Image (cartoon, rainbow, N blue to C red; front, top):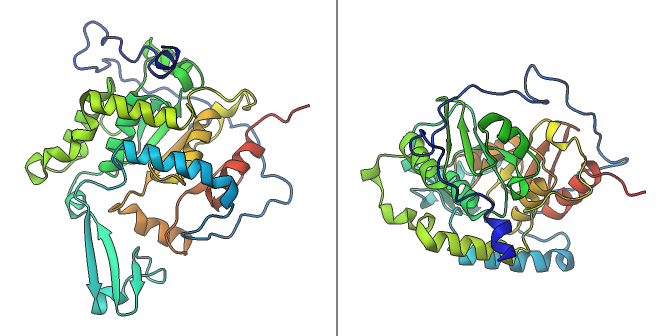
Length: 345
């Protein structure tokens, strides 16, 4: 019972009277430190002598340290049936000839080339869907099964999310959420592209599908069943337990001004056992961050290859507060610990 209370704080409260389907009627945007026009964010710097590690695709940089996390991350991935690993309309292709030759870092095109052939996967279905000009803002926290549902749906639709961590729905950006809505209930979505704001995970998923998804007739609705009903809640809760409730509480030594930092940018897809520890750490430290989705079939895989000039690899972190950009999961977690915690005395 204590575990369930931690995972599901006030997430099951009914929608406020007078609001339909979880919508908040007042949609005036709020500003906070770190946003355009607001106060300057706190000053932080990379650790003395810091050097970003060289990317090592398809390998573990610290096997003994990473193995336990990779095992539990893999189990969490399995119980959720790999939901969020593939975009809606994922289409793998084997290329030959000029098409195969066009794949590679030199051309900024994601794929794997082996001799005269290449493997590449995309989502032609999403290529025709409406794309938001600005990331959707989501107040959430890692351990909530209802927040996980929304984040996984965003991965299916290849939608970037500006995440505002609210560990336990009481810490981090929870007070900002209360000022905005009068409630500390997550998930809560703000779409700056349409002016829509809403509670309730099922309603948020339906909104994203209707606004940014392909036509319903273009895909099998069974592709969405892992996001529905008791199966989703049970397996998402189990996934959180397998990860030791990581990201469900604010880290005690997190800097008190982390919420005022400029949003970091994380390229990846959270079901990945390599990406998940970084996501958990960002949430525990209450750092605002934008998740740029890179699930299989995502158009952002090409974008990341062009941005970094190396073979596709995630996680990849961009920190505008220090100017640091780096690959490798354990090194990113170590970096976040060094920059965004209060040193022990």
